[in-house]
Length: 291
Length: 156
Image (cartoon, rainbow over all chains, first blue to last red; front, top):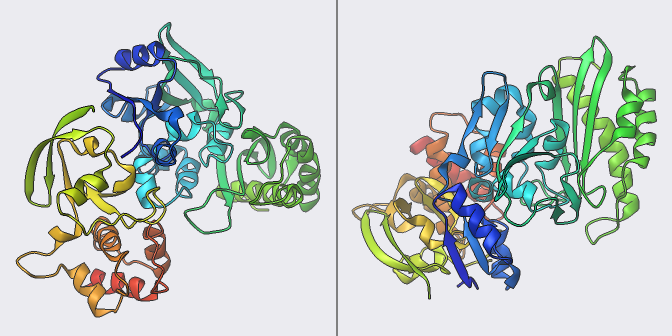
């Protein structure tokens, strides 16, 4: 038995937000692949649950007339990966989610949970950063939109407040049109593992020249990070070994890896420099460019 | 104790019952006698408790029993019909993919859904490995399991 003290299966978004606002200790449960593991370990911080699994409107994956792609917070990793809109317009999301856990975990876990639990290693976080997701959130004060930039504030921490419920992610057309992207996860095992370092790049090319680069890393700092110094180093440059090396040097100003039992700070830094080059090359190749 | 009334179909049998909200689907199934569902790690790492919920494989240890409301659950018991093994079960026996047997029921369900989902597709050993990454086996070294999936794919 999980040590659940109080369980509230909500019937509407309004019901969810009220339940979350009314109880200081209430936590959302969605796919359960994190929350139930913590409860199994006896973590009493998760004893008061607001279960949002009845909110089928949060499972939708859609595109509107202006090209905004919306991914409901309750869509599972598998549902997102296999969705034709995702494969057609933002395939790096599918590429990233395919690296999470194993099939059973991907069939239950949600991208909403992966981002909102604030995990530094979240496999969806690089894709979220390079496509500059908006997060559409409902709270007792109404709806508001936050950017993924600045959403994470520390390990396991985000800007979400009491009473907040993420409804969906929105990807605006200017943040994916003309871009090609890639994700590379370095982990000790080929599956069922947490990233030692995760890296994602999106590029927009003008001939052989990188017009725009968006580069993001996980487990490289206390939060998933965009690497603005490295991005600037590649802007209006060709994908030569020399330019990539300059980018790999610049990225040291963007990251702050630490030593953990998985890997030392030095090894992580080596991975970051190496993977920055690799993931940018792969993103360019995905556009049909050569390097 | 908080309970919720649920309607659930397990293999071919329909149940209507009040379920403790703290209970996992794994615990519920084992209490009802579906002991092919194994309690392994309890945290979604080993896949020994894998069952199909509306034909999708999930770790039943990380699945609240109440979530099974209005859903159809398949366990290894139900794959055997009229005393005959399913093609997947048959292939596991034929290929010697069963040693201690603890992981086998979970693997059978993963393979069953994997082959249903990829029906008619040519599958590489690498794809089979990726499709079974959520199930651990400590005996076989996996080669015979991959052989069994290939055989079941041909015979299915």
